Amino acid sequence: MRHRRAALLVAATALAPALLLATPAFATDTTATTASATTTTASVVTTDTPVDEMSAEDLRIAIARILADEDSGKGVVREANKALDGTVEDMRTFLKTGYRLAQAEDDRVAVFRILADKNSGKGVVREATKALDIGTPEALRAFLETGYRLAQAEDDRVAVARILADPTISAALRAAAEEAIDGTPEELRYFLEVGRYEVDG
Image (cartoon, rainbow, N blue to C red; front, side):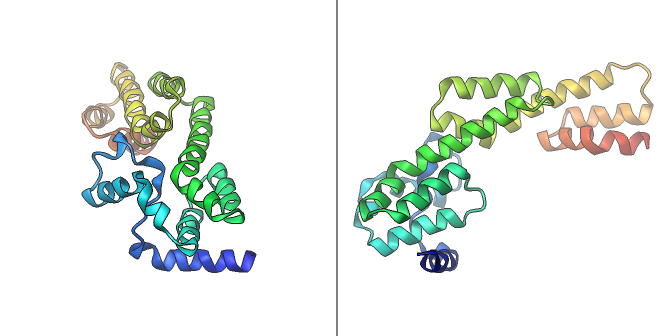
């Protein structure tokens, strides 16, 4: 079984562009703004017909693709392996509902880890708590994919504003902070982690 599974993983990696089945975890409103190709593929997965019509080998390859994804968490890996060890119906069930639920389990763990991080700011804690309170797979995924980044930017903007409120900072640091505070989430993060030290270094 291990040799067969390894062969499936190799085949899945090689065939990935040709497979019509996208990973079905997030065929939700949170994917509405992604590329049209992704949206089209996701909409196919939300119907039962494609999965129900797949052969056993196609089902195995689709699940192997999920296992080959380095971002698959422990819950997804556990349930995917369980499906591969089961019947054809077990594999269909995993692709239709089990994957989404296992991903939600992994996402919930990821959100709890963010909350446990002592460096998480008020905005991040607020949005992470909100996602956990809603509790749906879609809410958890939306937080991890977009909400976390935006909440972190909110906290970073507050941190940069505190730097600007310090009357003793240098003119160079003030100019860099003023530029960062109007920038993207990535620019804010870069300033706080690297940029401010480069200016005063």
